Length: 345
Image 1: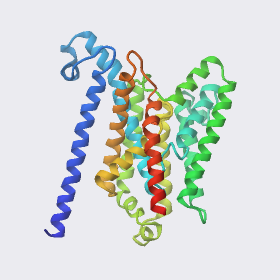
Image 2: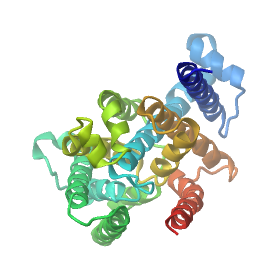
Image 3: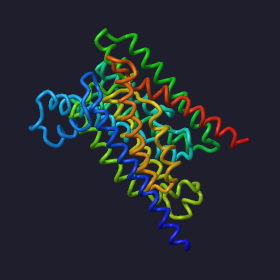
C-alpha cells in the first residue's frame, strides 16, 4: 500500500470514529431527555421533537421547556470545557492542563461571586450581564498571567501545573472569604457555583453558551495547522513560520471565553476539560483537523452521560453534576500523573 493510500485509509478511519462519536452523543442526548421523574421512551422523545403540536401537552412541556434546555446545556458546556482543555494542553505542551487544573474555572467562579455577593461590576457599562462578564474578565486575566509566566526562562510544564494548583487554592480561599461575608440568599447562589448544576438551564443560557462555542471553534479551526505544529515544540513551529507567541496568546484568550461562560451559568465543573481531550487524542491523534472536533464531541458526550447519572444514581434526587465529574475525573487525573511519572523515569 502506498503512503497516499495509507493516509487516505487513516483519514477515513478518523472520520468514521467522529461519525460514531456523534451518533453516540445523539443517542445520549435523547436518553437524557427521556430520563427523569416522569420517564419517557426514546420514541416519545423523538415524536415530541419532530411534531411538538401532535403529542400530549404534558409531554411537550416536559421535553421542550424543562429537559431539552438541560440536555443541550450539558452538550454546549461539555463541548466548551473540552475544547478549552484541548487547546490549553496543546499550547502549553502539558497533558495535565485544563481550565479546572490551571485555575481558570476557579477565577471565573470568583469573578461571578464578586457580582453575586458584593455587586461589583468589573465592566460597569454592561451591568445587566454582570455575572458572565465578571467571570470572563477574571478568567481572561488569569489566562494572560499564566501565558506570561509560561514564557519566563526556566519555566517547565511541571512548574505551570504547580502555578495552576496555587491559583486554584488562592481563588478558592478568596471565594470562601466572600461566602463568609455573604447574606443567606447570596450564599445559596454561591454554593451553586461550587457544586455545578444544570437544573437552572434556560434557552437563553443555552444560546449564549452555544454562541461562545460558535465564536471560538472557527478561530481554533483557522489556526489548526499552527496548533498542530506547536506539538513539535516552539523552535520547530517557529521554523515552519508559526508566530508562536501570537498564536499562544490568542488561544489563551479564546480559551478563557470558553471556560468563563459555562462557569457563569452552571458553576464549577471539573475534569471535563482534562478527560475529553485525552479520549480524543487516543482515538484520532494530535492532528487538529480531527483532534478538535473529537475533543468537542467527547466533552459533550461526557457531560451528557453525567447528566443522566445525576438523575438516576439516587432515585427522586438530582445530584450536583460537578460532584459526579470530580468523582470520575480524579482517578483519571491520578492515572495521568503516574503515567507521566513513569515516562520521566
